[in-house]
Image (cartoon, rainbow over all chains, first blue to last red; front, top):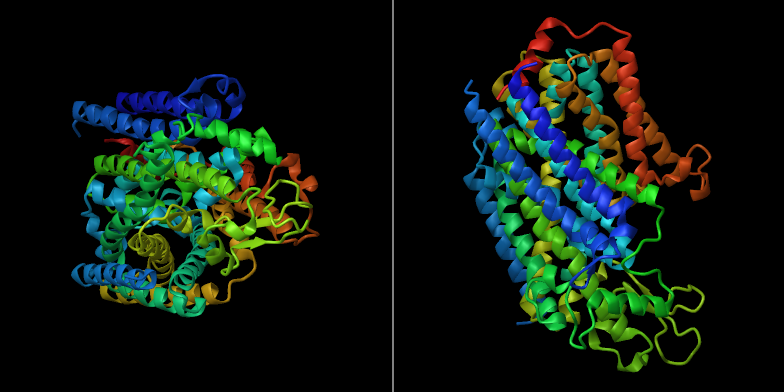
Length: 77
Length: 553
């Protein structure tokens, strides 16, 4: 397996872990725990479920775009 | 001007715009017809994907569903956005690199088998038809509610418009009309939301207004939780569904989103692999604008509604109440005869029944917004329904003309012949969709949400395994897809439509609802595919080389 593909898989596993933690973790599995905390008028778990996870999703894709563009430039083909 | 006049003006202007774009962007080759000549910029493709994706249901019903479900409504918010992360990271770049026209194209070539291709075509048609019938119905409903024409007439007008630009322009026409439709629908969604956020919290950004204090200094969410407790509803910020079910429904919606052929095919239209990644990011950003505003509208509308009607004398309710009562979307029955509106959780004493669609549609009136906003809402709702219908139509017509005709039945067909076949197929698809819009089979409403389960159980694992596993072969993937989609169809028919003896929610396997079952069906697909593929021969050399090629930058 070449390095390009390995690096890609590493990025994928990191970004997808974050994807899982903010939505399924903070928003669903640990929502009751997170709800003890408060930001503004939001309970934190509720905020992640209805707002926060979506913002993180957008950031994750653009991070992947950035990382892969950099990687592509290093591996001209 | 009167409300009705404004509606006609707004709808007229936007429809003229769509037709103008269609004439300007006619398709002259199959490449233009199927993938817009692979020349769409990432931002334009992002907008088109967003419009394609957000249907009449997202525009009209979603905020209403969240308004009544509170925290439980989060499954739609996370489910219908999180799928784009999977799409951008696991599917879109590789499929673009592969560089063909359709999803069955990929499955057929990667699994070197026309049987696999046929199974994929079958799955694509099932998923797309369950979805498009709902859209045509949506077009009809919007026309009938805003313009007081007959629902069937509305469906005919919608069919004529879609037919015109989809048949003429193919993917190219659809893409650029969808860009315009996105602008119309997002503007129409945001304007009332911003007004209402200003009125209720003094903050112009609804996403922030949602977490702010009302005029009395109490946080809106706390106030609504309080009202809910008083009236016996479950708390707005906590759920009533089981955690397992919320988890599985969210997962099914995400996996299904990433597996929907009409969404995937949009990433074939950009120039380069880089653009495919980037445009998935733009698409999600454009979608997120609506999806983060919807829960704010849900909260404002719910609070507003309860405060306006709860325990108020029926006689003094504002005018919008009687306007919407006459459409049948609101109904009041003074059970205890005290002349007050009792709106509570207990169905025995509750006197008010509210349709969820009212939350978005009556919003401008509840907040006393000017008449042009209502015209705008009508145009926005139509844009949402038409753009989704057109995208689905293209998948159906390319499945027939490209995957079936060109790849399986008559490989020597000329470019011109294929283009004619593609146009003919889309005419028939519109007529069929229109027929289902006018005579909706009972299962339509029940199954649109389940289209995601079907896509999750069939396409998503087949494509992802095709990219990330070199060992996966045709035997494995075909048996996986067949098992996945059959299980999902069986579960859906048994528990949603009452076939095979039916069953109530107590009979659900492991307590999983049909909406969440797609996740389990997908797991079954993967397990079967892995077991079968390791007991049969690995894929041939040239396919392994093809996978290597897809993985390179």
